[in-house]
Each structure stands twice: as structure tokens, then as C-alpha cells.
Image (cartoon, rainbow, N blue to C red; front, top):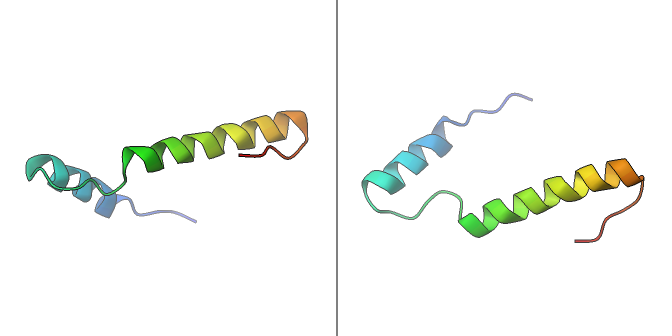
Length: 51
């Protein structure tokens, strides 16, 4: 399914220009990267990776 990320980038722009809260926190970004890394590791090792 194709995504529409314009709202996200508009939110980033708005947060920078207006010193507002960002649409995704840095901690949420870190969690997403941890999930992606665990998925890659799980695929390579053919096992479930606990987070």
C-alpha cells in the first residue's frame, strides 16, 4: 500500500518554523529502528527476537 507522507513532512516543517512539538518523538524514532533491526536479525537467524 502506498503511503502519503505529506502530513508528516508538513508537521516537521511546522514544528521547526513554530518551535512546536514534532509529529514523531525522537524516542519513537529509536523504537522504530530497534524494531527494524530486530526484524532483520530475526530473518537472518530464522528465530524470534525479543525486544
